[in-house]
Structure formats: structure tokens, C-alpha cells
Amino acid sequence: MAQDTKREQPVRLPNPGAQPFVAALKTLRFFAVIFFWLAMVSMLAHVAAFVSAEWLHLYESATAPEPAAATASGPSAAETPAAAQPAPPVAAPDQLTPEQHRDRAMRYQEYTAGVLRPMRALGILSAMLLLVTLFLYLQIALLGRLSGIRPLTQALGLALVFLAAVVPWHNLFEEVRFGAFFDFAALLEIQAEHAQWSAGDLVATAGYYARFLAVPAAGVVVLALAGIQFAAGYRESVLVNE
Image 1 (cartoon, rainbow, N blue to C red):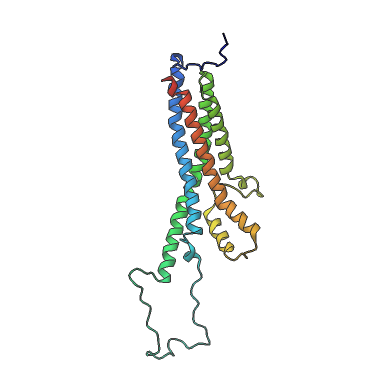
Image 2: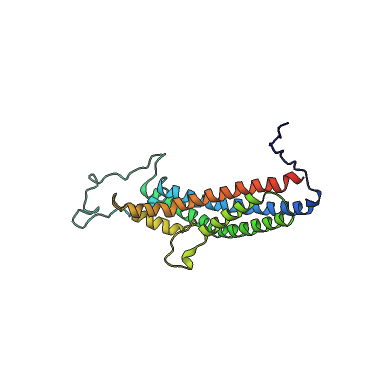
């Protein structure tokens, strides 16, 4: 009689002795979810700020030069006959004058800067607390001999990469200029310079989009992958033991 070489899959049953560890992991998961979404919202706010500045052009009128005044060689308003003077432009109901565009752009700029400033600090703090929470979660799972160690380890590694991407390294190393969280004033300044770059300046253009779009977008992807791996580890370490 031929020997059946097919191995039977092990049956996984709930572990009654793991209930204290499961209760602790549930508590840590609650805080991990809060820190995850705080960091994600902060990251998405920076991506939205770049999109608004680069493609929606919400802040261009705020930095546009004032209209040039009449030159000294031309006739003044007092010298021009009243019949020859053009009538002041009247804005249509659905149109704004250049001054109104400039005022609105300035308000948008102030609102965005006011939102991104606390978001940057909140995102960095949330990334640090998320890394600590995942580390404690992994340690409790190891202590309780629970499953899901592999995805939890991957989530911890991805959270570490995300933290390295959002830490303002330029405060420690002057030559380091990259970071997922950028300064909004620096974005507007470099964007104004970017509009004057030649089409062949590919290196500067690539650095501009890498600094303000690629790195924040990569931070969103890394954080999302960390959340997916943590969810998989939570299912294996907690849900199978309930």
C-alpha cells in the first residue's frame, strides 16, 4: 500500500491561556489605529498642498506682481480729458478682479500654512508613537507565543522606514534636504523659481518633484503597507484566539 506523502494541515484552535495577552493586544491596537490615521491625514495634507499649488494654482495670485503703474512719460489721469478716460472695469457676477484674486490667494495661503504647521508636528509625533506601539505589540505577541509574528515584524519595519522619511533631518544635518513633511513657505518659494527654469533643466525639475511629491507620496504608500501588514498580524494574533 502506497504511503500517502500529503501532509495534513495543522488545526489551529483558540488558546485559552492567551486571553490576557489578547486583551493587551486589543488595547495596543486601539492606540495604533489612532496614531496610524493621524500620521496618514498629516501625510495626505502635504500631498494635497502640493497638488493645490502646482496644478490647481490656488496660490499663484498671492505671489503675482502688482500691476505696473503709469510711466512718467505717459499722460497722467489729471491731464487726460474726462471723455477720453476709460471707464473702470466692472467685475461680472461670476468673475473676480485681480485684486480680489490676490486677496483670495493670500487667504488660501494663510489657511494652508496654518493647517500644515501643526500637521507636520502631529505627523512626526504620531509616527514615533506608532513605531513604539507596534514594537510593544510585537513584544507581547512574542511573549504570549501568538501567531502573526511575520506580518507584525514587517509592519514594524515599514513604520521605521516611515519615521525615517518624516524626521526633519535637515535640523541635524544641513546637507540633508529631503523629508516627507516639507515647509509650505519653501514650497511656494521654489515653485516660483521652478516657473522660470528652462525646459532642459531636468535635474532641477526632477529634484523639485521628488522633494515635494514623490517623497510624500512614497510616505503614504509605506504607511499604508504598514497598516495592511499590521491588520494581517492582528487577525492572526488576536482574532483566531477569541
